[in-house]
Length: 149
Image (tube, rainbow, N blue to C red; front, side, top):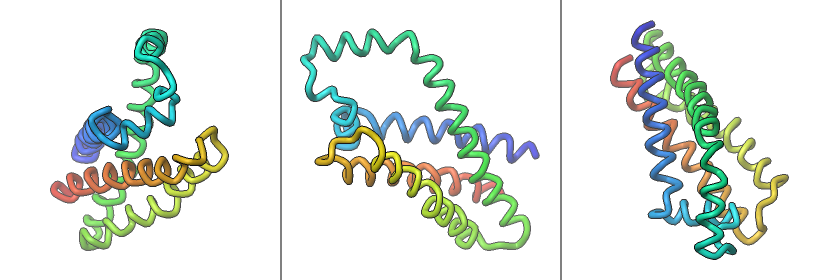
């Protein structure tokens, strides 16, 4: 049980690290995300103002994201460790994780794009950016879990 707990917490750190990099302004995905948020239409002064306005809520936002990452990580760790402890090869267990991504995370992200307030010219780019961020995160957590299962 300690291994599951440790791997789940390590998965949260992995998810935060990947998300921070993925959506940073140093990447095309980060610049796309800023466009999605409307930052491309703001002057540098307005951008700074928006950032300052958002700062008081950031601890709650990050805490919420960490809770969501904890759930995501726990699910992946349980799938990988329980599968491998029951004799399932790692690649098959990894297939279970990918299947969950394909059947749950991809449709949820797709619905968010379809029904959300996303500009049509960036909708597909945003969709693929978000689902790939999810997949990379899940595979990284699964890889770590597979090392200790």
